[in-house]
Length: 130
Image (cartoon, rainbow, N blue to C red; front, side):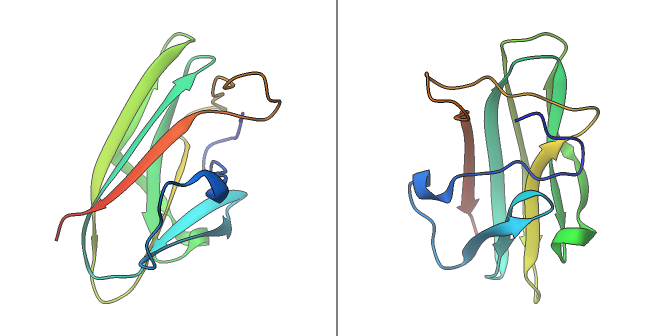
């Protein structure tokens, strides 16, 4: 929560429904980065509720330090307590691709989920379509 632009949002990989061997979650850029290792086209889709105005997007690249913003993936809101939803297509050729979900402009905050301190709700779906 409350991470600045270019810093990866942290995902608790213990709560992932399923994660195939072609998608590897690891620490990087201050949070969680995902590596897509299998050649193909992927749909990356995220959804979360913001506790203040802000925007998020998907950053991708060859390595975690070299990710850049995919401007087609930006979603945001000018008010608090608003659900945002963004997605993009990512093509993986002969080399693996790394991606992360991160704020775009300013520090964005996600609404906490339930009563557990440090628990936030964000849905990330990765679908390989070819």
